[in-house]
Length: 289
Image (tube, rainbow, N blue to C red; front, top):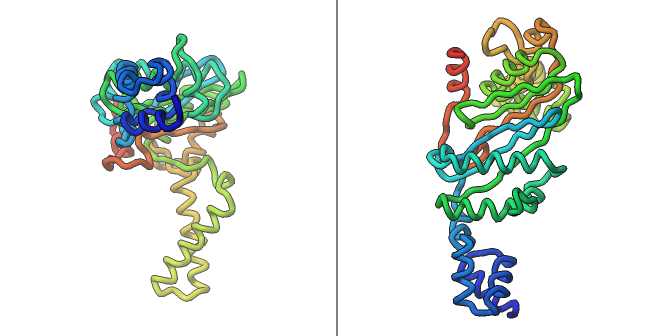
């Protein structure tokens, strides 16, 4: 077995270099037998799907005492997102992440669940289900013992929001539902970087100048519009979705609760997929609850 044979097998099957090497070792360099070996393992079938777009899937949250993980796993269709086997795979991956100290997807793929490497588990499920499956992202959140988690899963996993608060866990969930609907970027304007603020100021000034405003007037307009921008992207300044007469900050103060952090995942966010109005869906759902 040499590098040329490994490359030939890879070109023929689309499988990874390491898998091709293993296949040739297992079949004593027989290319034809190695192709069958990869097919039997489901590897070549899964490799055929690696270039497909997988922008559907599930966003989910799992807890373990003072630790939680929020993650997104993708598939190609919403139909498979509802498949019990895919949903079980999400739970298995979440379990493994919570049991280990990891920060990168690549690290998770090397971990094992019941003696099977996560990467191999995903490959096997890809081959069985018939769609590209992948772990896109995850975040481990840890809280102090005097803090509370809050969570909200929208439409069975289209959006997942995890919050950490000091105070009422019911309020933590209420705020998570608001975040799902209104998509804040940060908790407060202090969390925006100077570069982000400077960039927004430059955009707002260009808009004012394009409207024919003199430079001095444009500067004043920027100040007012920047505040409006803060109200859009900063959670505490947003109007609370269930009571628009108050801000989220006022809602939290009214309920003696302090928001420590939040994380929001929307399936396929930033990926190539159909446009859906998640904010309207969540608002409608909240009215029913």
